[in-house]
Image (cartoon, rainbow, N blue to C red):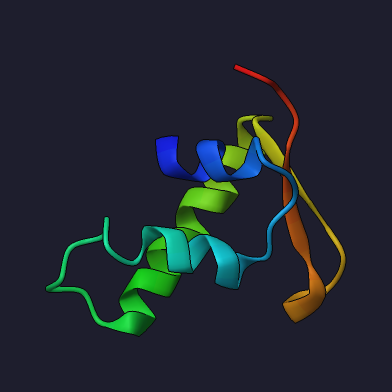
Length: 69
C-alpha cells in the first residue's frame, strides 16, 4: 500500500501505471494475472477504508488519493 500511496501523491494514476510501479515489488512467483488481481484487491481495500477513490469507467478510470497521510 505504501508504493500505491507514494505514486498517488504525485497525482491520479491508472491501474496500468500502478501495476508498472508494483511489478518489481510483487513476488515473482505470481503470474501477471495474479499481480493484477492483487493490485485490484489492494485498491478496493484502500477505497473501502476511505484512503483512495476512483473516477472514470473501466480502462479509462483513474485512482486518486483522498488523504495526504
